[in-house]
Image (tube, rainbow, N blue to C red; front, side):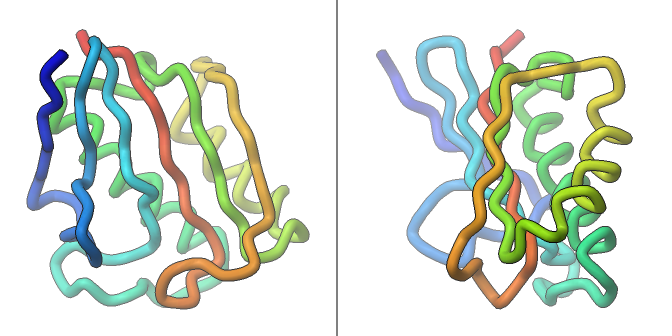
Length: 127
């Protein structure tokens, strides 16, 4: 089974030795996306909802680069710096996914890259 490493300029560059996404076995596995503006590589201003929106936009770009959309997503994981942000992040998440209901885990993390409040990753079935 071949593994492909994927990259798009529409999402932030990886900030470490990893890929934005890999594909293997008919699935796309994304790296966690945070609230980095791909043009500036800076964390966006605003509250957790603004950060969640940027993370979801970045993840949408990674999915699109592989020919996928949210309807192809089978599993997501959301990492929160504070579980008290769950409701606000869930509102943003729901706007992006619409009627799509993949399996999901949401976990509190002791720390996230660049001090952000939310990170999102997913697994999608390739078209």
